[in-house]
Amino acid sequence: MVPPRLKLTGSLGTIHLRTQQHARLHTTSRRRSRMSELFLAIGFGLVVASVLALAAVGLSLQFGITNYINFAYGDFMAVGAYIAWTINTGPWHLNIWVAMVVGALGVGVMAVLLNRFLLAPFARRFQKLFYILIVTFGLSLILLNIVSSIWGNEVQRYTIPNENPFHVGPFLFTTDQLVVIAIAIVLMVLIHVMLTATRIGKSMRAMSDNTTLAMTSGIDTRRITTLTWFLSGCLAGLAGTVLGITQASITPGSGETFLFVIFAAVIVGGVGSIYGAIVGAVIVGLATEVSALFIDAAYKLDVAFVILILALLFRPNGLFARPGKA
Image (cartoon, rainbow, N blue to C red; front, side, top):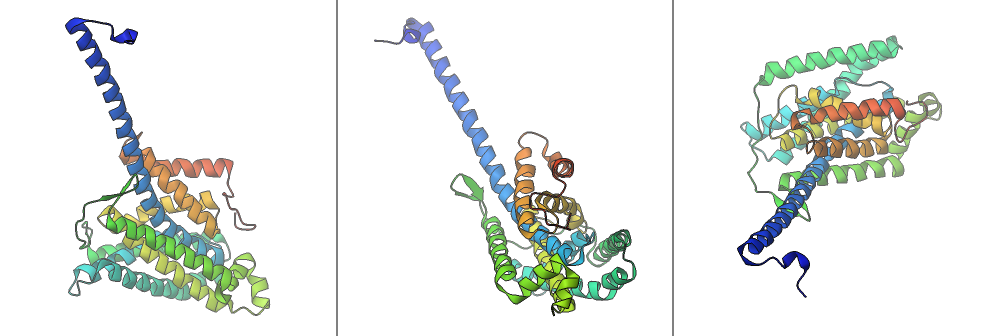
């Protein structure tokens, strides 16, 4: 039996049938297009979350030991990015991933020296948090101007082979993006192992909980502080380079601009919590990229600001709050 809607005869029935088929195909095509765009956004959101996780974990490690926020952290990222750019595009022409390691180590050493000769003396002399924040803010301006003086204000790019993206399930990635995700996952696992299964990691956790008690129990707090600053600096340098890889460009202020997004991830996850920083990075990374489907992409970083405000209003201690770190 012919369905009632197909009982029209002649050219009028044919036109009506084709119109229905075209409408259904158009609707299906639009749905597939929207789903494809959603998966594209989620895929790049995972890449952004990987960059965020590297930076947020480094900042959380440093905060856990020092109990103050480093406003120069974004500039640490920029220094690492430009060291890697110099190694990658200069006379050496080293592979970007090798250059990234060199940049990370360079920032790690820089972080240790800055803490030893600038930040630690101020922290001992001025106990109030406000003074230390002013010092780190001033350090941020100094580093920004140093980077601009050495490398200039022009947009720079790494020497990376152009590759066509390919599908991984419903997602679309380039090889570089997959490497960034893999680096983040491997380092997060290694940091977890370090914190839970090594003496250094357990000493870091003890200092983060109570520095005075850790000192009285025989932990070399100065050594642990130095190692923490080195690790935090290395993660900042790595994050700065992979940020430049994913954005296909670097500028002196690129890390400083990204710092606000890092703060959002850290606060959402819980200040001082390593695992909270990872979760916060995933939430903020996905939210900012998926939001670009519904708002102008130029405003997607504002979504991080909205998330930050909501977190401060409804969950000020974060999802994984630690006692004494709020």
